[in-house]
View 1 (cartoon, rainbow, N blue to C red):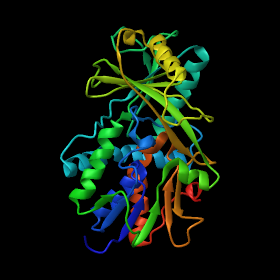
View 2 (view 1 turned 180 degrees about the vertical axis):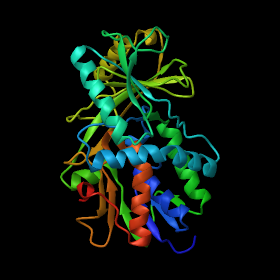
View 3 (view 1 turned 30 degrees about the vertical axis):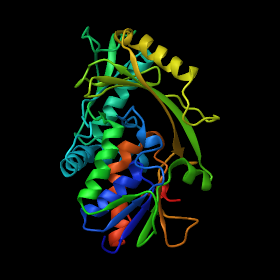
Length: 334
């Protein structure tokens, strides 16, 4: 391999997206991860690319909006470069509305989306109807947003890795760090900076609803992947002993998903997953100069929105590493 321009420590979605964005610009990249591609939280099953609500706008919400708008082109290019599918689809999201207060709030947010989402997506209150893939709603109304998308996390990260290699990059379990060095080491890296890890448990059910909108009910994401499975999750566990074990907490998630959406009642569970997501103290991603490693960089803290943020994280980090152009929001700096 030619002289390495960028070394990324960590092969989760942030690390891979940074490496891919740099490789697309002609940089020689190396990704190092002892445990392999997406061995941590990025190897999950849910893949909800869902926006923050369109109100109380701030840099974090604006960054995520830009990234979600970029996502279709980003993941299409990854798939073409890698030669296989990422599972990305912008199919929108449905959310049942429990009472009149929720309806009023949703309608106010619809007005906010009309401005804040720049005509690129809609947030609407619509009748629930009686279609098979429609969540029961006490008010008979649901929120339908057209910004939400979904992705298959494992396929997407494997495609990113394959695309990096196709562009002349390297993915290795070990090796020297050369050139610009970026640390994207998940929850262990966040813990070094005073953040923490939050465990999540999720499941895959065998039910074919490919092409349907994702659902959000009872604080759960219900995601119909294109391969004939539906993902449900997840827990948010601040305290845990085994980061990869599933238990009764996941049984509760599955039961709540079925209660919120009874069409899943007979769907068999085909996979159970648990992992730990990196959470910064601010809950925002942490990007820029590494505070503990002079001359090096960090891209971490995706927490529950890592896949949704990844396209723009890759872009702004490539700007910084290759061009010295700093477009990172102040709230994301270490």
